[in-house]
Image (cartoon, rainbow, N blue to C red):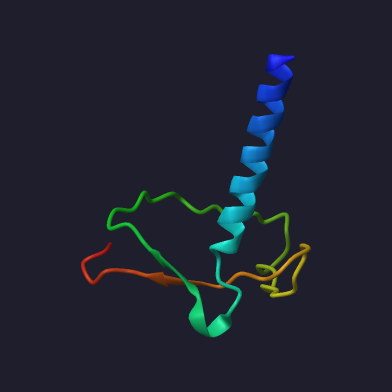
Length: 81
C-alpha cells in the first residue's frame, strides 16, 4: 500500500515537472527563449546518404505535433568556436 502511494506520488510529481518545464518556453516569436551555445564544440564528420536522392530535403516549418509552438534564439559568444 505504501509503495503504491509512493509510485503514484512520484508519477504526479514527474508529470507536474514536465508541465512546468513546458510553460517556461516562449510561444511568442518576438520574445523567444534564449539559449546560449557552449564555447567548446565536438566536431563530427557529416556523411551524405546518396541513397536519399540528389539533394537534401527542403526544410519545413509545418507543425507536426500537438500543442503550442515554442520559439528559441541561440546566442554565441564572440570567442566561441
